[in-house]
Length: 245
Image (cartoon, rainbow, N blue to C red; front, side, top):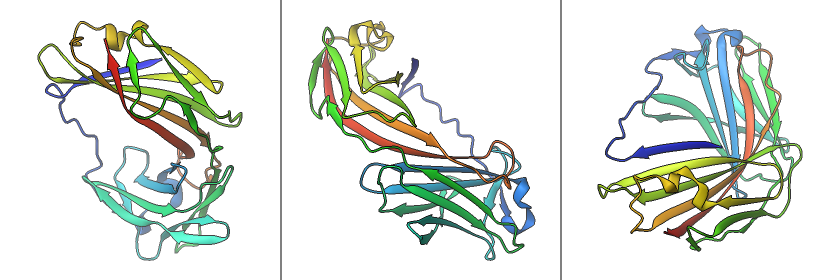
């Protein structure tokens, strides 16, 4: 179980973003670190590709006109397009394919002919049966997360996030992670440090969110630099729940 805690007034913007760019035609494929993440919400899948020079902390790789990234699904190729977010460059596509074990192939086509092909399958879809949106909880009551099934070929985790008020009337954001090995998880709210902390103003309610994620790693091309990876995820969330002390 992993706990995270931040207060809005104490939050310092510490961003590790690549601030330089390198054209892809200047770097051999083995000198490019690649991170591919595919996330499905059950309606569509977002494909995100990040390329850096050397390793994950290297400069952003910007595709030259002669190079391209494609996601291939059901024999249809979709070109990933450049997206720049606060100096961080990646390539994205949104695809209407979310089936169980749906295969995605990510192809890096290069002018020099040294291409790199990677693949991953989506985890099984799932439904969160309990809790439900807008549900109210008392600190003395358990919060039960119940799914409609399991996926033995993926790893699953539950994140409980809270937005409370501290004793200085500031917003206190906290979260705790739980491994999910079956289709059911019972959370004893009263036993969690995030709610027993003296920082929390217990005369006020907290807003709760439950996120459930299933992850599956795929086969990354050996043409890329070490520690490159490709990962897929099915993600669902229950929001706007209220906790009363």
